[in-house]
Image 1 (cartoon, helix red, strand yellow):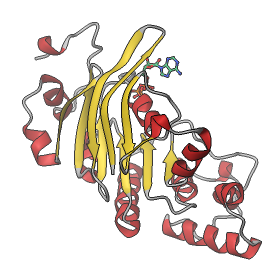
Image 2 (cartoon, protein in one colour):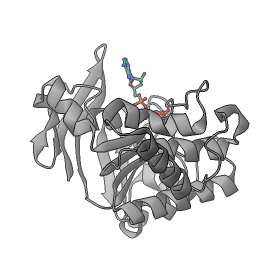
Image 3 (tube, helix red, strand yellow):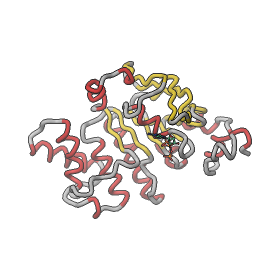
Image 4 (tube, helix red, strand yellow):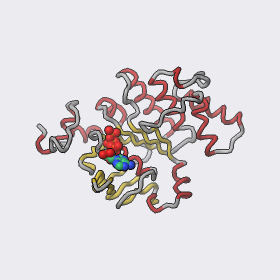
Length: 254
Ligand SMILES: Nc1ncnc2c1ncn2[C@@H]1O[C@H](COP(=O)(O)OP(=O)(O)OP(=O)(O)O)[C@@H](O)[C@H]1O
């Protein structure tokens, strides 16, 4: 469904992506791991055309989205739902209004239909009956769930998550992971998730890809990934923090 071919991107002369090649299988969860500042969010933003590549292609069902005009890109984006790190809920709107927001922006639907869809999506994430609350009345985990309800409001085929469990305690992390798994399965979605959390990664992934030094340095299903002989993968599997590449090159990590 999504294929990234030889993707390059630099900012102010600093290369971030140096030839990323990645196949994201349809109807599966692909988790991208890598050190902070390594370009994972930049990669995710290329997938929905929020960032333009310097070179390379992002093919969604065979269409290179880098070549699309704004209007065509708008159509492709309707197939995506996304939950970015900074995509907070609108604090001045109720939870229900937050979920209704993309429906009001993109669909012309009667009010009663919007209310039905909002209830349905809130129920899917276990927030039925919470639609009238303000975001400030919700816990961190509930806010993530509300964000997920908003991300699936338009029935996307592809869902992108930038660190859905950051800042949550281990129990809430597991709850959100299970929700991601259930939502993906129930709706048959193609998911791309960025994660820092080893437990989470192995809980939800069908495929794991390591972004390191601007390329996909290792990938495979969770079993294959756990067998990869790569110093950074070994470090990740041992639950150690990511090295800063300029301080500790890959070859020197023990
Ligand atoms: N619009 C931009 N302009 C300039 N530099 C940018 C821009 N977007 C990202 N960068 C730079 O690209 C690099 C990669 O950033 P990115 O947010 O993709 O990292 P990340 O792997 O997602 O990190 P984290 O795990 O901490 O979120 C960083 O050095 C960042 O400063």
